[in-house]
Picture 1 (cartoon, protein in one colour):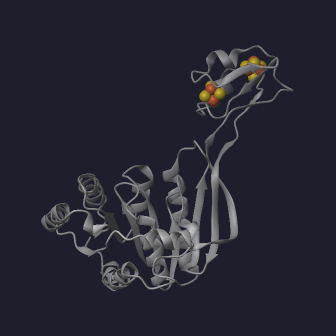
Picture 2: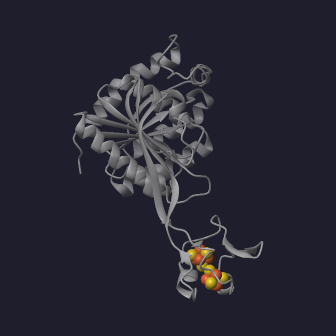
Picture 3: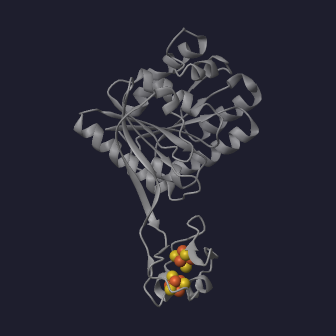
Amino acid sequence: MHELVVISGKGGTGKTSLAAAFAHLAEGKVLCDLDVDAPDLHLIAGPTVQRSGPFLSGHVAEIDPAACTGCGTCANVCAYGAIHKEGGRFTVDSSHCEGCKVCVAFCPEQAIDFPDRLCGTWYESETRFGPMIHAQLDPGQENSGKLVTLLKTKARAQASSRALERILSDGAPGIGCPVISSLSMASLALLVTEPTPSGLHDLSRVTELCHALRVRSCVLINKADLSREYQAAIHAYCEARRIPVVGHLPHDPAVTEAMLRGQAVTEGPATPFGLQVRQIWPGLQHLLELPSPI
Ligand code: SF4
Ligand code: SF4
């Protein structure tokens, strides 16, 4: 099974638009949106949900008012200020509860439950591009790396059960926990960058991350016409590290227009940008299917 993860060192590089375009062009794959903090691939893919379920992670304290005698011990021992007295009752503010369980241990009445915390929802869907695995993390919830791992497991299971050879994932921006989880066991990372000082800086961070995780990488320069100087600098950087540059794409309003139509840029009216993406795909596919050197 070949797993391509599209990532970028930061947001706004066109990563999701390109992931959607490759999703349109690639055959026999499971599509996966791993940007669980701010998913938007569904806006283009238009999924019809077939199955969904809760993403549970950690725990949260809940006071049983019927068993609570109002002694106040829990509020005193909570180091996070999550327990308050309201309307004569002690209650837990779940947004401040860190799930440390101290209040549970100190409550003399065993009046505090400690259930799993609901942090989001996962989805298994069908789209015009094929099956899609995606999720939504609830606002303020953490453990996005754990949710990414869950989605990747579901994507692999779906690919196996449907005899599909590829998984195409839209990863999270940055280099944090969800990106590290996105890259786990990936065959190839496509690093989308742009020729600016911050683009080069962020590219260096994600290439180092891929190197540390022993994931092969290649680079696609989007909005390549922004700066010839930084385009050359990115090429020099990649050449020194033997990272292939698979293509350049211009800054083109066709990308936004396609997104507003709910389409991949390779769907609908032909545009120079869409044609260039089509030309890039065979080379990228070839890289994806190369045997891993590790
Ligand atoms: S420690 Fe237990 S009994 Fe005391 S106020 Fe808290 S929940 Fe109620
Ligand atoms: S589990 Fe910890 S953080 Fe949450 S309310 Fe109890 S003492 Fe406070």
